[in-house]
Length: 285
Image (tube, rainbow, N blue to C red; front, side):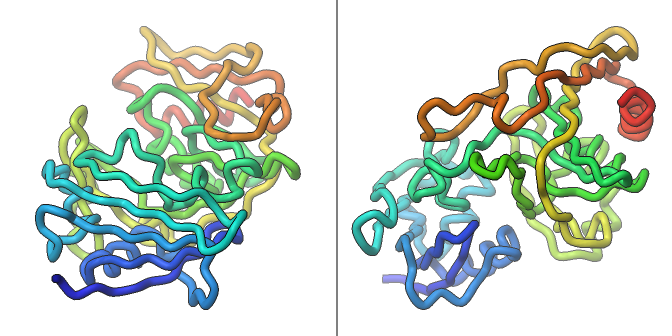
């Protein structure tokens, strides 16, 4: 039996104790550094194992997309503290992650989550960027930060349904293709991780502080929704906010509870730079 280690995490008030391989502790500290905590009494016990190669570690296998079998076991510590789970898989894409435990804890009923990036503009207003995969949400958010905005969350917009506030969610930023090549010197000088996308190939992961010079900003109510689209030319229009995909167990939830009724639709071409997209958005808000 390989040596096991333990690390504590706290996501939005839900406390986890994670049992894993020593290499997983290093990966968890990197991937979820802002959520690592001293946990005396956990709400959920999480056990991570790379079944086919235990010493390799769960996250090493997951990031490499190596096809090895992995097992995730989740146990609530008391009645009402969460939902149990036991899954063995090679690809995590269809398994709800416990990081954060949006499905296995009471966050399932408190929060609603949709893919997207959120920035706090220089004016203080919060802007949610949504759109299809690889349309440029992360690169546009980073470009907006170069124009005075601050990043709130990069890949998941997590809303507290009761307060309507989007939450600060800080995890490494993913770079691919040209955006990765442009940052090779930064990767060479900073701690990083890599993973693989079946669509875009190698993806490099860097902490926001190493890219933007600071931690993610505070959340709050979203003031603007921007939908990024690809087209034959640059353009903008105002339309009712499109129906977004939501992950929540809250009965009766409607996105109108947390988002403005209208969105700014921004159309760009494949050759439009993130800087040009960011400036175009600010000019048309």
